Image 1 (tube, rainbow, N blue to C red):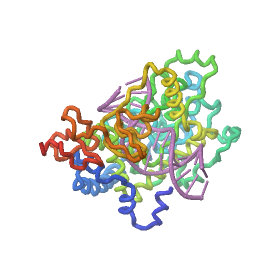
Image 2: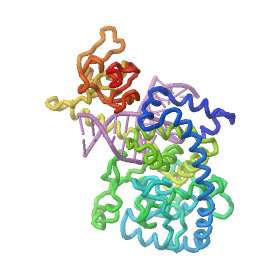
Image 3: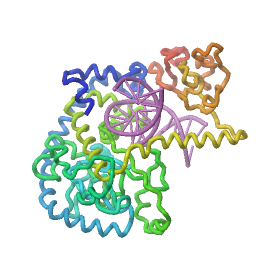
Image 4: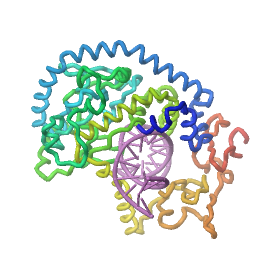
Length: 431
DNA sequence: GTCCCTTTGAAGCTG
DNA sequence: CAGCTTCAAAGGGAC
């Protein structure tokens, strides 16, 4: 846990926060759009802590009770479930949830609708029927269609010749509390109330969240259809040499935090754009105490451990550079067809960074920039920073670029700020 | 349909 | 080994 150790154990949370925000001023104003002023943010920070504590206290008891009850019959039923699961394996390659890691109090972090937020209407419903251990249903990884044998069995694990370290005893790795695999460490108990399986999610019907269908995209927009996995007509496809399913990276601590808190932030500030949400979440993340963050680091570590055990031969390398390759291929295709040049996503210049396409504001991503030209006219003979050919101030309002950072002086937030225009002259409030 | 944005952290890659 | 890059999630927006 680099974050936990990097601070040297001192109380440097505030410093850490300052360091992490490279463009604080700009980000601040973005957040203001939805009542996230600095003042509010300060309130938010304190309220977050209270919120967290409140949630912990109010839900902890109920959650603990629930866990205890459900844990009682787990060990016997777990074996039962394994049998059940193995039967399901015959029925569909995506139908089985991996049952071997009940210690992990995660909802399926890879299931698009598997929000962990307590405020999310998608979630927060404990569905641990079927005599399953509550955690069993949350197991995020399914290995069935990937590895022929159940990965949770040490013998199977050892059979896989791999370059990743393996452990047959996870508890040894994480110092799991006494009580077995199904019990969460006390410090993690708070998490369980929100890390619940989504409604309607059958425990054994969860496709592996980290595995993308062979035909699926790697992109985050690739919301694989859960139903698709259940369709029996998928089966005949296996006659052909199936492509290796894409196994996604395990989520890190912050990603887990985002998963849980996203819906909450959305509800609080009516924002919907993920970029803005993520900015807020980033701030909240820094506002968390070390103890609160530690919970997520712990979860993330378990997540990685689980992932490692399930896919010992998987490496982040497997997914590394795929997007880039795809993009490169596309570019090659487009360059081979000069008759249909890519449209430049140009907006009028908003920055002067030399490695950006000034007009486009698309760092190294503007097709024309990559092809050696600018979207519009500007060039600099000495190679210095290239200014925008058309200042936002120059154009009529209708031609102004979209807001990068909402101008809080404008009631309607219809204008933009940028590093060049911290207080744009065309601000509605000035016009 | 695809990509971008935006965040942090982990891991891979590169010089 | 340090520094950079990519990818995890999310979903609206742009094209």
